[in-house]
Length: 122
Image (cartoon, rainbow, N blue to C red; front, side):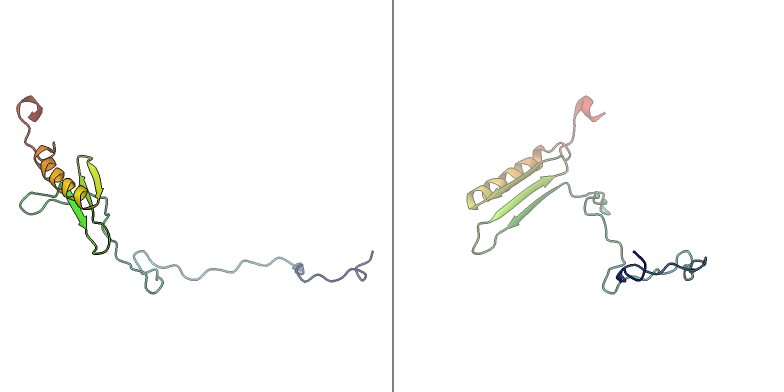
């Protein structure tokens, strides 16, 4: 079959006739220069939500959190979390009230908040 008998295919490009040098890229930004970001993309670095909270000026910092969500038509929900590893949740009026009381009791019994006595303190 000769080249004249074959149909010409659109997807096959013609081969280059000789060697060519590659195109050079544009100038690179200097160190610290703005790299340019898409519009609407925040460039500020946000704090890590999983990082420990820094102490306040008085030396205290949060250890336990109680989050309560009570939308009008739905049942209320609550979560109780502590840095000691305690993580509990409740759904419904009675269970949420019980979790609030349990969270208050944990505040007094938490090993991170309760002062240690004797040899364990040393």
